[in-house]
Length: 123
Image (cartoon, rainbow, N blue to C red; front, side):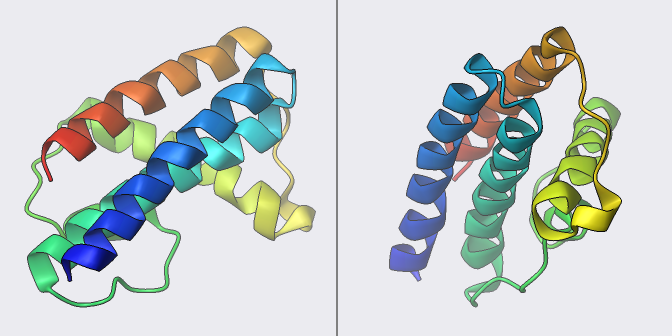
């Protein structure tokens, strides 16, 4: 199971770099999709750690965090909900969200980065 935990956590780190590159190059919706993926993978590492099983095939961050031993505050739960909007863009084009301003995208990226650090440090 440690191999699975390592896969999810290391992959999340690469995805965070990708999200930064995309947002810094004005590919805002795509960058926010990768922010979601960053957190999804970090949470899946936690799910493996707790359950000792392969994580469920879901993109729902709120469901994933429920399967961990983490105690997120309201601010974290709100961020998870905010990021959920952007995971749809890459998977379901008919639910394409409006592009945020670059300032808003950078704020979400910063929050993603902070949450990612917290999640990785808790592994």
